[in-house]
Image (cartoon, rainbow, N blue to C red; front, side, top):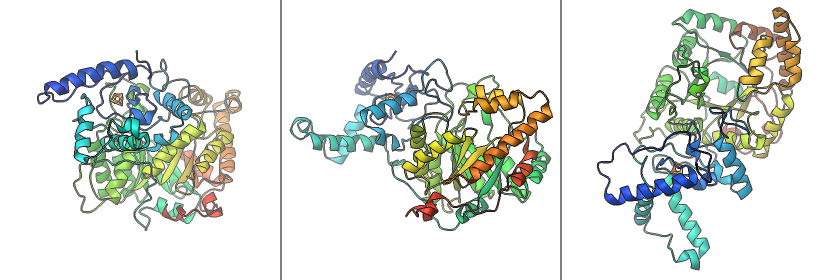
Length: 498
Ligand code: SF4
């Protein structure tokens, strides 16, 4: 049991190769493991970011996330293991108390496997020697300001290696012309509608073509989920290509779960090679939310923020993470997900800011049922000056049945359905009447969203009910109209860079 962090979820790491470790390295490793294990539940990731996380070890998070909350966490419990608190909630709360919230904005690197399982002190000493400057111990007494500045610079150099160089700055895209229809329409100020399509369970492209046939003329792009809820289906990449071949624009979801950084790079380059430009980057649901048998726990090499950071650099700097040049850089239009209802809006806004700074150009939210709370979240984004830097697509789910409503209200992390909506669905016995009520509720929400400043469109997630999308679009009078956003009302110097 650690003193300052929640308990570890997974065992500490071991070095992948100890053959070359001398006595000093082994002794220091043993010492660090004992002390930091007792204090922080340290897993010996070898890439310590305790200073950035208010001295709570982020590696105690079951997903090993190093850049903030996942979409399903609540203030009370962890999404993966409800018997424990959410590590990142604790980090946000303590950072707030200590006045260190700004430190949460730096984009932390994924683990360097060569350093995993080893002490961190030798690395610091080597870096200090290479830099040829402080911090000097005597300044800890004589010149504390200088000592702190040099200490922070030293720690930063170690936690932000040359191959990563994460920071807390906004990075606008380094290109001018839109790379996809979705980007073009969003830039024009059209109130955009996208529709989600669940890829089929079998190798049946005709099913995708059929669903696209329903969506044509109603939405700008079809968005293909990527083994959502840790449940296998046709890949998002293959589905997106089938969609493209059918003459329709796809948004490929790409989740980090189950993929190493190498496979993520490879899949993204593959998508660009096939002509798929819109990529929605996700961390992914933990295997615990899938049907089982559950995979071994450590399935996250990267999180969504790291993925966005890496893909943006591949596009704008033309290089792989390992530094190799990409002669013809890919053309990605990058998106991210956001969860307005998981944590407090101010915490969710920090996470959204990190994604936008990393390179997210559009954001798709979890389904909105509580419009007031959604507006609260938008205001938190506005306070951070984010609405002029990203296009927000509000998520809408038409409820299909009372049972689905109850399931979503009670069991789906990050979804909040007000009691009044649950009641309207559950007090009807007849299935057709429930469906009609679901459509009525969705139309009410769409009407409110259309009139909400700060959003650029809606993303309709009609789970296994894609045929309803054209009706919703038509009856809500969506698609094609220009909706002024706050960035137009009060032009931001950065708005033009979206
Ligand atoms: S961030 Fe890494 S090194 Fe630091 S306490 Fe956590 S597991 Fe240990």
